[in-house]
Amino acid sequence: MLFRQNFYSRTAAVNYAVKYALKPNPAFRYFQLNQNVGGDCANFISQCLLAGGAPMIHNSSNPWWYNNKSTSNTNDDSWSVSWAVAHSLYWFLRINQESKKPGAKGLEVDNIRLVEPGDLVFFEDNKGVKFHSAIVTSISNGIPLISHHTFEALNIPYYSSWPAAKQRFLKITV
Image 1: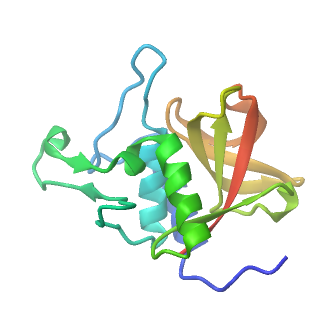
Image 2: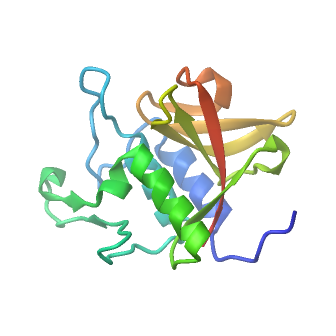
């Protein structure tokens, strides 16, 4: 399978993930897990995509953005749903891929051997809801190692994260 050339820097995305996986970047709001709902995973993954060169998209049909108000309090910041919610981020990436829209794109692959550092993993429940996201930061013996928030993790095997009915792997391009 051939993939088109792109402007996504896997190295920059992975370097960002490694730097901020265990200690979140204070320039962005951190979303606490509240009664097993929500969390910071998609926010962290969006930051990694941005660091890798994905441009923010401000259109009304398929937005992906974060607005840092440049104050000392990140509670003043705003963001799109697709920036901060795993299910919405997954569909933002898939829609961009299928419709060839500008910005980050995600091509779902079933063959784990196609996954490389900088690609993403989404965790799905038995109802088809993508409830968690992670970035592949390394490969060890053919197994993708991931980093994520909610809980904070660095280079753990993808199957050691949240229990899921299915994991979905997205090849990322910009």
